[in-house]
Amino acid sequence: MTLLLLIIPAISLVTTGTTTLVLSILNFLHLLWIMILFDSSGTTYQFQYDNFIGLDGISLWLVWLVNIIKAIVILNDKEKIG
Image (cartoon, rainbow, N blue to C red; front, side):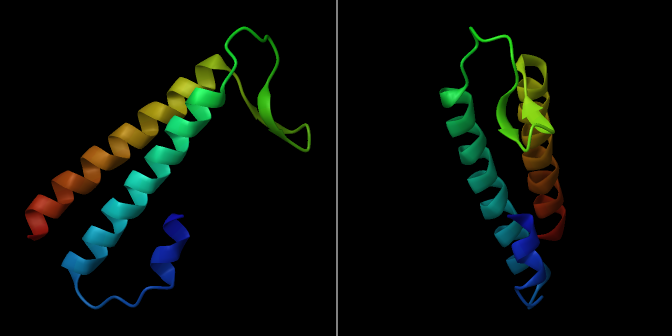
């Protein structure tokens, strides 16, 4: 989703910061949906892609942590710009 920022012209830093925050929130909502669908009783990877990439219980929480930190960094940067 954050690749959409390459399509949007950089009109101002405030618009870019707001767009980044909105896309980060959408990404977090997608992650919440994945967490709801995650079956913690299984012992195999879930949401596999070509039997190469998948999520287990630990990596799910690491992805969650990265999304939280990303939102905090965007909010902190937005306060310095605005």
